[in-house]
Amino acid sequence: MRAAGEPDRRKLIAAVLGERPADLSIENVRLVNVITGEIYPASVDIAEGIIILVRTEGEPGPEAKERFDGGGNYLIPGYIDTHVHVESTMMTPENFARAVIPWGTTTVVADPHEIANVMGVAGVQFMLESGRRSPLRHFVLAPPCVPSVPGLEESGAVFTEKEIGRLLDEPGVIGIGELMNYLKISQGDERMSRIIAEGISRGKFLQGHAPRLQGRRLAAYRLAGPQSDHECRSSGEAAEKARLGLHINLKTSSLSNHLPEALMGIQGQRWRDNVSLCTDDVHAGVICREGHLNRVVAKAVGYGADPLEAVRFATYNGAREYGFEDLGAIAPGFAADLQLVEGLNGCRPLAVWIGGKLAAREGEMVMDWESGPAEPFCPPKLAYIRSEEDLELAAPAEGGETLVIQSRADGPFNRAAYERLPVRGGKVVIEEDPDLAWICVCNRYGKEQKTIAPIRGFGSVSGAFGATVAHDSHNLVLIYRDPADALLAVKKIQEMGGGMALAEHGRICASLPLPAGGLMSFCRCEEVAAQAERLEQALKEKWGNVWLLKHATAALPVLPGVLITDLGIVDGDRQEFLPQFRIPG
Figure 1 (tube, rainbow, N blue to C red):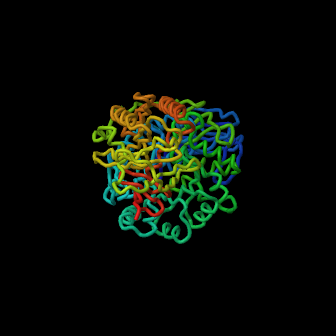
Figure 2: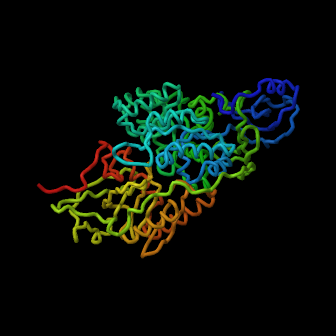
Figure 3: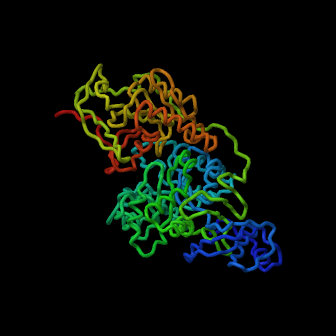
């Protein structure tokens, strides 16, 4: 598959033979050859967006319309992010492109399952259309787990093999996204088997997601079809998955960092061609401050990876993973997606080219394009939450113990335990225990259903915080002590058309509007980051050391641990509901 399309090879041959001028010559560089592992002085000639010639020092080149002096710096391929959810940046794809290109990312393979859960096929089409406006090579995988676990949660859409097939017919959709429902897949689940078969029959890539899976269960998952995994949480897990032939996507995201453990697992293996890099979920503020895939390169080098190999992970290996025969290297016939850097440690590029055209220089975009319409869509439907009483937990007449979710400070996977809590007026109350708060997941798609549970260890909660960003169904999640403030947060979120809000003592303290499906802003990276950081700062001032999206995976039932959805409290390991109350006798 050629990411840049099929070129007019006669023009390329004419240019390399000097019969017509090259469009660009980048001279005086130290070329990083990710195919052979060499670094040497060179110049690179480009025509029609394609590399036509790599010249060693002193070799004369063809006539060129433009010349660029590399100043003796390193020339490396553009980075390829092999797994990203653009929605997690809270930016649309076109603004995401403006943010990441200056950091050296020239290609992404995105799984838009966030917006797919909100609005189905139309959401994926929005991401495709927005992505096409920018020069960033924005490829998409059709999201198979919509919702992540049917029957344990409800979202705004349900995908079967029919929807997957429709998306696989779209230009730019190159495979099936992360197959997260790994327990059912490893058991031969009929629905997931049909979805996987849709991809296999078309020869499409199948992206995996299998945290903690090992042994025969992992072998069964591999046999079902997934080709990769980005969820290695230990060195042993990474080593085992690599040995089974899974392509390992090392990641550092804004939600987790298991890069040191995963890197350790593959360091002892002689061949690491099946290792690439990804960001998964990365926030706008992180991109502004530290960058994008270059940040993963930097961390990999910091954890002991050879810098040249880290660059290979981020370029050539990622291209081979997806079968992009013209991306990821600097050689004749490859797309001229390049970056000029001072070092191989993930530093910000001095210049970035996409298709042979200068896209960014010294951290600033040089290219620009007309933005798409900033019209809000798919607001949350929360009119059924009318009063404080709607946000209180009714106690069973028989009495008994209430299931309390235990939020962990050291990781995303919660636990739970039954506790005897006070009851007043038929309602469970938590006022006497300052470590307790309420967590409520409210269906945002027009169904009047919600789950309320006590949660311990979330922070010094006061007032209420609400958000329509809650993986992966993105129902409304509320964390609160005061139902009155929670109701106020709900109203503010409705007013904004989706987003996040912090309320206390009857007023809104801070908010972040996300009018694009309740997930994204139409603003650029700097403004999104500033809004998010103001909200997070307000949250920390009120609640202590609580990060903005601590709640974000609490409602994702495909994860291990104890989760909460609009349908109930879920044991993620067993994929079943837990009783909310334990009645004596």
